[in-house]
Length: 545
Ligand code: NAG
Image (tube, rainbow, N blue to C red):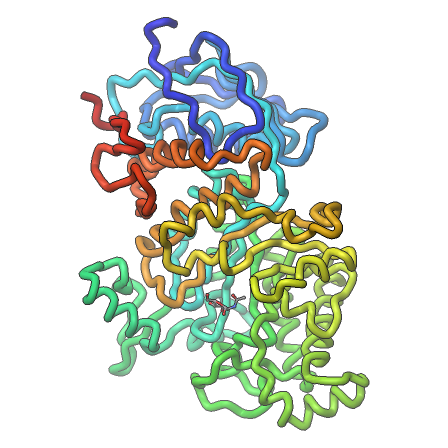
């Protein structure tokens, strides 16, 4: 095997331990993938889908021994896997289905970047070094949130993002499905939510985007034509997912080891709902309003029923533990004026509108629990009292006491502080190191053991000013790679320079995948077709010379 060229090992997120031995595994032209368990067949098929397009080789999946073997180990931390490659075979053993997927992603990154090509790359020897890798994630939650309300992303665009998440072993896709600017999921009981609520006139965000497109001569700020409709002379923007679309995405994610967490944001950010149905808001509204964060009315039974009916259709579509209620930024002016809200406050002995918000959240949480689900909410759900089982998603960096407050009550928390993890914010020289060097345990100096209540980290892609797939990818990558590594790798092995080097290798891969990532403003990075990083010429394997 001495003449076999192997790629330098360069994996994001950095595995816990890698031991290199001296030979190489070369993918055979007729390659068998062996599984020890029927439940791993979707993982094997997924592996075939990764390997077959670029190699053009023949693959078969079999129960029993193969050239590449997938198996389940009896023990190990959730998500852990071991990876052993020799001259003759590759063995991936995961503590769970997801662990096997992570081993597959490691195999993928050990192969030359050309493996990502959608067309056959000829005259290639597809080789990986012989290694032994032992690996497991630091946190169980390595998430990404996509806001499909402010601007809509269709099924293929969402799948592309899921592919990218899978490549970096991210495992929670938080789908922000509704907001003031658009309702994106079919609810059979309330058809107007999508018939009307999924289509809006151009708003101020769209106008800003148009201006940015002109000013920067950048078409990534333009709304794709297929998301525009002319109805009765009005230019409408939007789109939505049918329940079948949702099922399709959920199973696409499931194959890749990704859980999907839906969010129907309430009681605030409900303009798309309250403008289309009566009895949901405090006062009658006439069509699309203009107010920010139009809340539902927690004083009216009809509003509560509406919210529960919506979630009754949502819950069966997502076979996972968590439901995200939202709960952020509730504008409470109407609640102060609304007789029904004030009546509820009196009857339930609540002290304020804040407590009314938490009463509403607890009502919904009890409903989720009755359906066997646990609730996540933005950190505003801390105000007015947290129930025992709620998980807090901390976003307001300025609400500094949220991590201690949440965890010292015994509740779980997910970190998405906006100063580091908001991927809609512009990128500069600091944004990557700010994520990479972020230390979640620094929030718990007085009680270090509370770090155990942290489920993990997540990047949020809010899309007010992100109207296209290209712009979305540009904002997400490379920051999501830093989030993936922060969430996965052992903090003792943190190495910023090492990360930067590995990042440059990933850019080569992302080039092949046609991902519109952003070149960071860091020394050694600049845009070129043949990628050059850190002063060293890296010839893409797509262009051997
Ligand atoms: C917050 C809002 C969100 C908005 C984003 C923009 C949360 C939980 N709420 O104001 O609707 O899109 O910032 O960065 O983030």
